Every structure is written in structure tokens, then in C-alpha cells.
Amino acid sequence: MAENTVRVKFAKLSDEANEPNQGSQHAAGWDLRALEQTTVNKGSSTRIRTGLAVAIPHGWEGQIRSRSSLGAKGMIMPNGIGTIDSDYRGELQVLATWIGEGDCITLNKGERIAQLLIAPVPTVEFIETSVEELGETERGEGGFGSSGRF
Image (tube, rainbow, N blue to C red; front, side, top):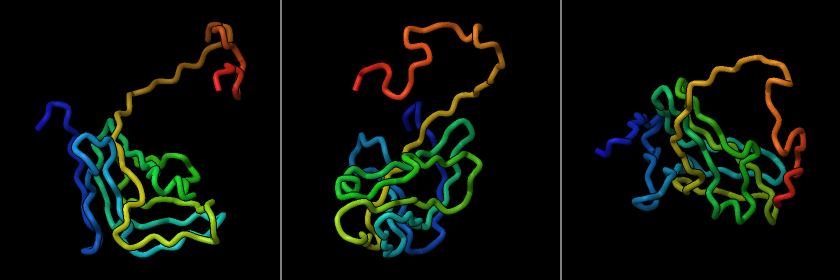
């Protein structure tokens, strides 16, 4: 096992659940599959069950991200990236919205629906200060495209 390996325990909540797997040896994400056939209607958000629960170690988080192939068709995750905290033990579910052609998309049982990435979470301490003590930057208070780099 590599020195930087993170061990994530998982449990199948259903005999029909598929364990997470990588699409290739160096893939960053682990594919998650639909536990059951699910229809996502246009303009609404639907939870897609995976039938899996995980135990992510403290100091790490799971990030559920869309699959580019489904995104190209019009299935998006309304929250961008779904965060799985290290103390969550419920079923992994993928929140999906259909914005593509047609009234809906039907995802088949066993179909790859998202990717799970495991990322470090640093210990953070917020320290209240004055605006002046925050320091000045070239950008300053400019936001929403103010850097002009799009």
C-alpha cells in the first residue's frame, strides 16, 4: 500500500449496491452507481440512491462530483459538489437536476452516476480582526469577475 493511501471503509446497505471503483488506474474519482432505476425530471432535483455508506477518516472529506458524460447530456448537481463529512454514516446519495433536452432522463440500475473524491481537510481557526488588519491586495473589494480573467 502506498504511503499516501487513505483507507475508507464502506458498507453495502443493499445486496444490489455496487462498490466504488476507479475507471482507470490513475483516476482521481471513484465511480458511484445507481442502486435502482431513477428518473430525474426537468427542472427538479432528485436524490439518486447508491446503497452505500462510508466511514471517511477524520481530517478528510468526500466530494461527490458529476460525471462529465452525464453533464454533457444535461444532468447537473445543483449544489456543484456534494460534501460528505467524516462523521456522516448515512447512505451516499447523489442530488441531480435535469436541464437537458426532453422532459427527463432515466438512469438505469447500476449506471455510473457520479464520482467520489477523497480530499484533505485542514484544521482551520478563524480569528476576528479589523478590516484594516486584513491587509490590502491588488484586487481589493472587487468581486464577481472583477479580476477580468474570463
